[in-house]
Figure (tube, rainbow, N blue to C red):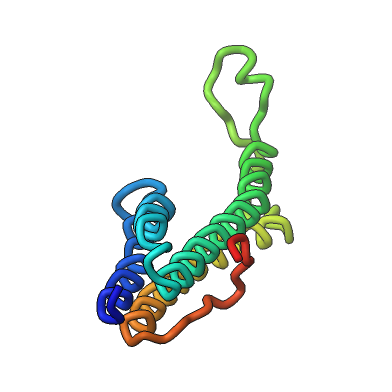
Length: 151
């Protein structure tokens, strides 16, 4: 592979992770397809393919951890004010004594996890574009806070 094609394929590998906004799990499917088809032809493409897949797996892991923090807390905060006796009798949900005075540290933790998740997705977008530009220039780029699943 000539260096120009290596840079183009490497950039495309990074940018293909942005397909997650249009196709579910596209951030894994398309980089894997591009990387696996060209990794034997070029060490540069192989390096960049591993970097984007490690980054996407790390982001997935961080997102799962944040959801495991936020979702149970939100469910608890919503349902702690529900009178379940009315549900058993076939009536609708009724919230009793719902006010913001019950907004505890747990709810703040859930809100913080949601905010961190939002920032994580914004940073992910920026870093993918940055890595694609670096690959286009022929430079090797290692994503920050990435767990090396593929070495």
